[in-house]
Length: 108
Image (cartoon, rainbow, N blue to C red; front, side):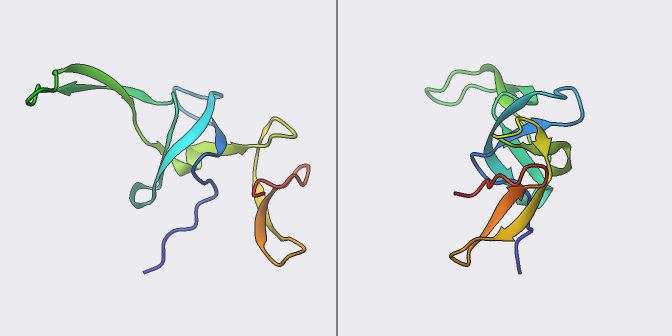
């Protein structure tokens, strides 16, 4: 079975377009393809009540929860705006994601 093709990758800088964290940006930490989600650094913080286990201390921990992939947009380093991407073929035959507005390549 083939995996889903998502428009963002790990370590990309994205902007949240909807929800409680609208217009905040951060780096993508993980991709969750089964739930069509991404975990973004400092975005969608939730409190998790944990029980003490062995030497681990219990308490209330804060961690990032997944954001749906449709609610984030890639941040262009040249435009400094959230943009859509298109795929272009480079001189060496490799495919790369490019900004629709300015043509800046995300994959180097």
